[in-house]
Length: 382
Ligand SMILES: [Zn+2]
Image 1: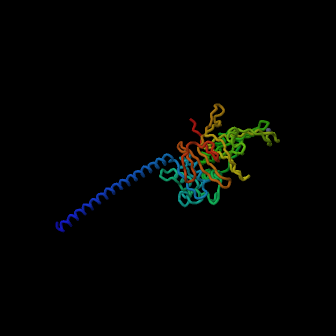
Image 2: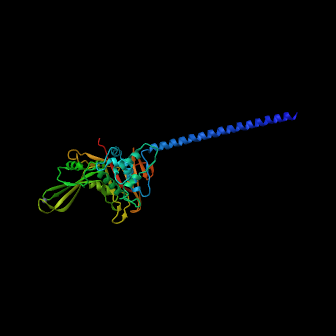
Image 3: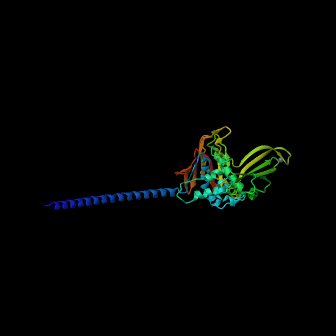
C-alpha cells in the first residue's frame, strides 16, 4: 500500500467520524429542543392555570398601599363589591364642581373632584385586564389634608368624609336634615330628597323617626337622616350587641320635656325607629374608644342576614325588609396602631383583601372576631 492510499483511507475515516459526531450532536440538539418545547408547553399550562385562577376570583384586585393606606383600601374594596352602586356611579356628575375642569388630569390630581376620582378608581378596578393590583394615588391625594399619609386613621371617618365630599358635589343643600311637621315618614323623605339627590343619598342614607308624646297625648314627630348606625359595645354584652340592636330598633324611652300645649314640664314617651331603610345599611361597632383610649376586642355575633318590619307596608300586611351581609371591614391590632382588611362578596364568592393581596375564602365571615364595620345589602323583594 502506498502512502497516498493510507492518507486517503484516513481522510475518509476522519470524514465518517466527523459526520457521525455531527449526526449524534444533531440528535442531541433535537432532543434538547424538544425538551425546551415541553417546558414551554408546561409554562403555557401553568399560565393557563393562573388565568383560570384569576378568572375564578377575577372580580378581585388588590390595591397598592404606599404606607398607611389600609384605612382607605379596605372600604374601597367594600364599595367595589356593590355592583348596583358601581353601575350607577359611572353616569353620575357633580353639580357643584366645574366638570370640564374636573375631567382634566391636572384637576384630578388636585384636591377637588372626589366624585370624578372615585369614578376613575372604580373604572380602573373594574377594567377587564390582567392587572392584579390597582394604584389609586390620585384618590389618596384628595384626602391628604384630612388624612395625612404620615399617620394612622379611622376607616369609619374616611367613609364619612368620602360620603360628605361626594354629597357636597352633588346636593343642592348640605344642611343636616332634622325636621318636623311632616304628614308622615314618606312625606319627610320626599322633602329630604328634594335637596339631596346624590348617589350617596340614594344608596346609603336612611331616616329615623322619633315621636315625642306628652301625657296630654300631644305628639311631635321629628325626622333625622343617618349614614351609618353606631353600635356601642362593652366587653360584657359584646355577644349580644347585634341582637340588642335588632330588638331595640323600635325603642320606647321616657323623659321630661316642656309641652307646648300644657305649657309645663311633663313626662314624654319617646319612640324612635327607622322609617327609611337604605339600599346599603352600614353598621359600625364602637370598638375604638378614643375617650378611654382602648380598643374593645371580643367576638360580636352578627347575622349573615336579618329582617326588619317594612315601615311602608307594616300596617296591613306584615311585610319585611331583608338584608344580606355584603362586606365587612376588619380591624386588627391596637387603637392607635392597627391594620384594616376587608372581606367582600363578589359573584357569590367571598374574597379576603389585604391591601395588594387577596385570596378566596371558603365561606362567609361568620361572626368574624375582628369585624369593625358591616355593610348589609337590601334584598330585592320578589
Ligand atoms: Zn302636654
